[in-house]
Length: 150
Figure 1 (cartoon, helix red, strand yellow):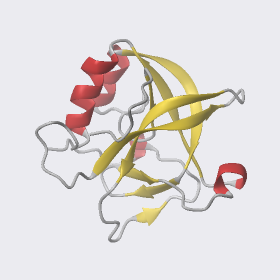
Figure 2: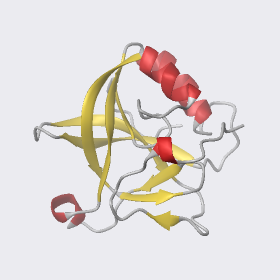
Figure 3: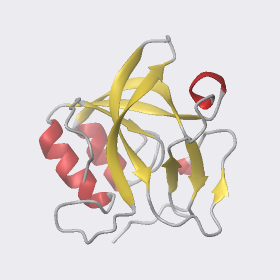
Figure 4: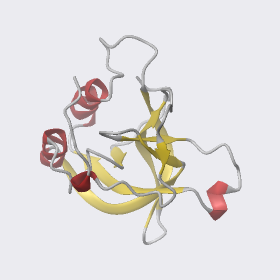
């Protein structure tokens, strides 16, 4: 679920839900939203195997100097409808058991034209184990072995 009482109709995607992904859920999201283009958020990106995860950055200097995660902002046509199934896909839906692996929160995203706006993002809350940090802040879903989550 999400921890914020704020709301927005924009979702920041950085992995299997990105428009260039061949994942069926990315295609569903593309049909229910408008691609607003590339953007970045502050955080640390990890490759978790079949999908990535973003952790919020603990370093206040990152907001100014680095640790940017690259992705795309999708403007949802019907946010309550889309967020319900995306929460389920991310394992934090109404019927998922806690603790959740992901949590939906609102963060500021910066579009390439330097415009900043609030977006939903799914932060990873699970264990990192052998996950590899992606220093570039970029995940390439088309190059990964994308498996459907159950």
